[in-house]
Amino acid sequence: MHVPDGFLDISTSVATGAVAAAGVGLALHRARRELDDRAVPLPGLVATFVFAAQMLNFPVGAGTSGHLLGGALAAVLVGPATAVLCLSVVLLVQCLLFADGGVTAIGTNITLMGMVAVVGASVVFWVLQSLLPKREGLVAPIAAVAAYASVLLTSVVFVALYAVGGTAPVPLDTLTTAMLGWHALIGIGEAVITGLVVASIVAVRPDLVHGARRVLKSRPVEIRTPGAPPAQEVAA
Amino acid sequence: MGAGHGHRLHYHGHSPIHRARPELKLLALLGFVLTVVATPIAWRPAFVGYLAALLVVVALSDVPATYLLKRMVVEVPFLVFAALLPFVSHGPRTDVLGVTVSEPGLAAAVGLAVKATLGVLASLTLASTTEPRDLLVGLERLRVPQQLVQIMSFMVRYLDVVGDELRRMRIALASRGFTARDPRHWPVIGRSAGALFIRSYERGERVHLAMVSRGYTGERQP
Image 1: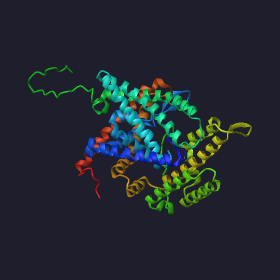
Image 2: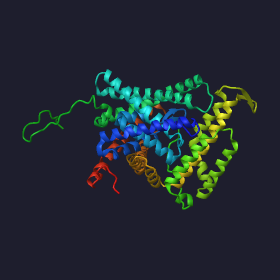
Image 3: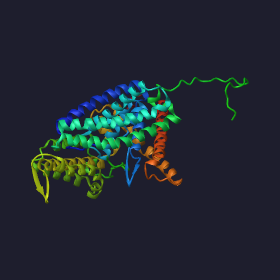
Image 4: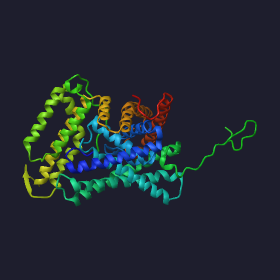
């Protein structure tokens, strides 16, 4: 959900704008170091993917459907720094080209969906991966848990921002219950979809999944000399 | 959650608003919305003034009003939220059309609806009068980090390519009799998204190699 103009007061919007600018600056710096001169085309295409993935509708039943937010998915697929960049660019484009999300709320939106969701998911993912056995098959379930945690964390931070700079006198306990309850449901969808997408990519191109790097078995190149019988070739 | 973004908003034209420098339009939009958000909701005449100013710009831009009105649906989720506010807020109660609601909640709801509507209308006016390419030039002139603008320009350039890829996948699924109805169909959609990621990523690598082979070094050429 994109925060519109007028939802948070001006000082909170400016403060989150400063946080977002600092975060994006840090992400730019780190992405340049990680990706070198690929730092433009790759985040560009991954951002386009996130944008397109948000257009995929997942039917919930009874005619309603939901869509992916993509913060955790991007974090697991391309790593936190690049993911922050991708999500920020997606939010900027949605704000300026599609009028979705307020112009003054762009800092809030980037902070919530671009940074809190991505960094939260990355931390949860990293901790769980460190604790659990290093197996390729566990990457997708851990990604799902990280996605669930990131949705809940984002809604908690949203409530906190609202407590600081909200413009309507909604009792905080009502808002907290409503937001957490609602996002506990949305989070299930986000978790299942993130898990399914990550599982399908790990199955065919595990080398592309940033979050699978630590658990990927090393696959040495096998050199076969012509003439000599191949060591372990399966008859085709 | 917002609706999907199926199409761009740009409306072709040659009005003074279309021809204005993009960085000025961006600054004007930011200044306008900041002013609107900073204005206390009790100053009603000010909001009438903002709306009038905005309508003058819309009239100057030659973009049909119906074109903009139809695209204001992105705002609907917030209006629903605003409509709920009077019922969940605390404070003194008041009667509206026979229903008891919270007075400050009602004021906040009206404020949110008015400010969000002005914001969306102003953003729509910018988006419908400015080519995405010009918008990026404007951002660059406003000293937005060049790398960020370049990533945005990639996204804008490949939006339709990746979107079409997604559309072809959907057609391929539909032509094999697939209709997504409930969560049992999620694995299929999940695999489509996975395939889309691999194709996007590999396209990114190919584009990068093509750029390198044409002399790209990470710096934007003048």
